[in-house]
Amino acid sequence: MKKKVLAAVLIAMTMLVGCGSNNADESTEATGPIILEEETIPSSSETEESSVEEEPEEPEISVIEEREIVNGKMQSYLTGEWKDAEVVQRRNMAVMQPNNQRAGYGESSPLLHQYGISKASIIYEAPVEGRITRLMCLYEDYDDLEKIGPIRSSRDYYIYEAMAYDSIYVNWGLARPWVEELINSDRIDNISASVAGIYNGYDAAFFRDTTVFPGSASEFTGFLNVKKYADGVKARGYETEYRDTFEQAFTFANDCVATYDDYPEATKIWPGGKSDNAGGYGNYAENNIMFEYNKDDQLYYRYQYGAPHIDCMNDEQVAVTNVVFKICHGEERLPDDPNYDYLAFGVHGTGDAVIFTNGKVIEGTWSRESDTAANKFYDADGNEIVMNQGKTWICCIWKEFSEYMLWQ
Image (cartoon, rainbow, N blue to C red; front, side, top):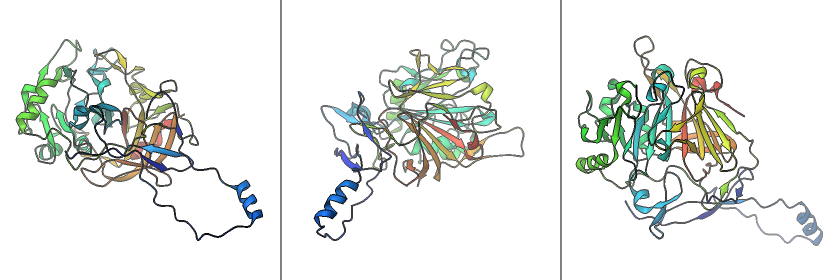
């Protein structure tokens, strides 16, 4: 990957975006040059009047532009945080993980766990058949992990999202009619378990473990061996550093917090609402997916199935800095066939979006121009939204069911 140089650029933002200071060091393109009118010399009275009526200066915010290595550290493309340069430059792995109760301690338990999920930098969540959701977790800090799991099967809209982050895609299984051609093409690098429809499986990276989630069905016992994943990347000859087509996940605030003082507060967030619906995020009474903001650490804590969302590796509740609703066109693949309920989502193009950060809610739009283009998020005035440094959870919301989204 070509070397990049850090330039923390001060960008004049609208009055709706402030830059606050707190214990955490925490993005949008410049709005263009300021055009000055032809200079005139005002009278003294005009000077006094103008000084009284002068508008306050617009707040400024420093955003991360290019990166450079400083004392062995770089600012992450996925979180904006300073991390080991080797970690930051290495391509992340996008791992498919389940998100239903059977992935936990059996159907009778309200708790659901994944192993290692708290280490993910970005988590992408979308509905699958049955209107449960499935996760794609992007890991860059994985050197201290022995395993990640359970590992589940692929849907094509997850692969298309992984392309935006130049990820190496990890899966065990696939919805073959819609994924087979894509995952075996040169459009995506993948480390996959060998099943029908996978032409280049690397089984050495996968194993079954029945001790982590006792009583679970076999499809929830598959795990990724992280060290052997790295062996597979080398064996397949994949480039290990980010390629030139990748820029960054989001635009991040650099040395401050993007406070969004003039935007409304939102401390509780329900991507699927608080009532049952036939799509989107499914049955509220069962899933009950919710994020709750904690102003003390400026994190959104995740809840589902009536309990905190826990990483069983360390018993930590999953928490992120930013939550994004990406509202997409969705449809059933085979609407007339009751035996199949596979879904499709349009993750390219444009659509509505809602961004939650620093306890505020910003309604706007998203845009993505191509397979390798980043997801861009804009406010109602067309300014790119500056994310705060840290982890981000992206909820893919089926547009037809976006009326159920709720925050307060």
